[in-house]
Image (cartoon, rainbow, N blue to C red; front, side, top):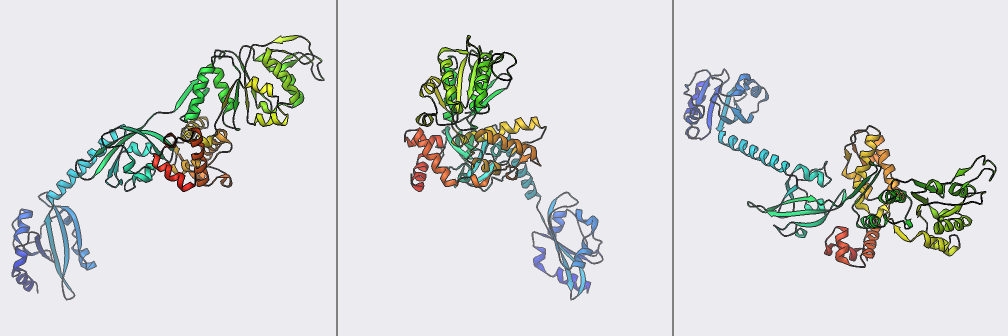
Length: 529
């Protein structure tokens, strides 16, 4: 049977002219057939009937028994020969009827292919190292805006550290299509939207020299205003244009002793800003004294403010200076002035005008050199209309009035504040929290924060404590979902507010909102604005 097979293969002419090497080995591991290509590739001379040498690296554990048992062939795409060539090898079992006769080994020299593959791999690694060494974020996209490649910093800048960007469209990543980007070769500042909010980015678009597509390089333009005073005690972080305008006003008025009224919702940071004004003023080395008009009972508020003498009331066993005296040479902060009882407002008005007062139970007039800052979360004009607040006191306190925007109107600050609070509480509680996932950030950005910055800080503090890993995820953010507005309602409110701020100027509104003017026009039409 073996001799018949040998005669058969030797008479099959097409096997001799194949470019692929062919060797037939009997089950007792003797060579039954080989062609010229086999000798050329392996650089050896063979003879029929001679023992089969170990041609390939796989022969150290001969696969013939496996092929016989499984009655199926094997294919190996890259294997070494004795002369260090790379070949693609297939081993096919040879049966005559049910009898196993040996194997047919067919192989092709793929050394050049492997060499080119290694070169491509080296080039790819070189490109990857080069891309990752660039300090700007880089996206490489095709002519439809689909991402082909990117560098490591791009994922960080785009707040998508845990997402795969390849294959995603530019529109899904930064809410801008390829057509909405600047002209190639022109570096331009535009607004992009990421899971971490809306940012101004400096973008350069460069066409690929080979193939259709573009290289997009960009970096986030620093817009945050950060002020650090009193050894880190005061730190204000914002990139919101309205809040930045407030800080600009403060930088001017803080040098003067004019009275300031801070208006805004609970948790917007009025107390924080009052302290900031104090440290920006020439009175920074003097005391900063806060009086919470809500926390102190009406019956005790006058004594707390102006002090008392011994015997002024039951329990007054000695003279005691009030907050006004303690603030002498510094700043007196009247927090939540709208809750001050009406009968006490007259005495406050006199003090605001004359900077003089009398302790409770005393007839001696005293003076205090203080700068007055007041705050309220109530509508004082409405209280005046109801007769619950003195109009003359309102105008005396509000020589300069500053309205602090709620957090829902400055959502671009949320990522900055989140990172600040993560760093603050990670250090405080010795937790190794690296950051926040894009999904958790999206959740925070979709929330309207009725408790404003204070609520955000409390959420992050709790998340830092309860987070089981190193990244804060949505399950670590404990938000009352019932209080969350619909995305559509929030978008309508946001666009309406910005349009009011810009006096209906759509181009300026689009810039603040971080979108193209035509996109704003389309959204206004869709939302019925």
